[in-house]
Length: 223
Image 1 (tube, rainbow, N blue to C red):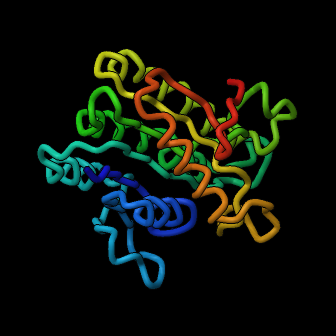
Image 2 (image 1 turned 180 degrees about the vertical axis):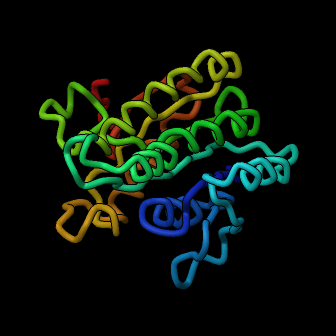
């Protein structure tokens, strides 16, 4: 029986790569896009439009899923945000956009999508970052961006009681420093390498339960 995956934010970069890798592994994949998809999207992927920052749109999106059950739902959302180091140098508008996109909207969507994750073996994963760990990012590099991912990790943890009740595994995923529009050309990890690794991590996590902070190579990260 084919497994089913829903990838939120699959139109480019890591989400696009992961969607293609899972489809190539014979998963039934549904991917979402905000405005457009990459050129030549995989015809095996079902595409749905979704802007996670649009409250009415994500509520309508969840309603159209009806009784679908997914083996994996991955919420891939992230923007760099302000390039400055200190919050007093960033505008309120830029800070709100960062936290809304990286933290608030993914969690609001997750609370709606949790019932669509298959009980006992299903995985609900989020694109987080090693940068969001106090222990891994000891120098507080990119503190404003990193703090949005720290907040995301904490809010994911708040889902654990409900997830545990239904046997669902929660994942905070560090995809690596990936050569994407956000990661830049000097990033050492390719989209393909990150996507292949993440697909393996997701498949290995099925049925484990609990909340795990893992990189794309399956290494456990400190909170």
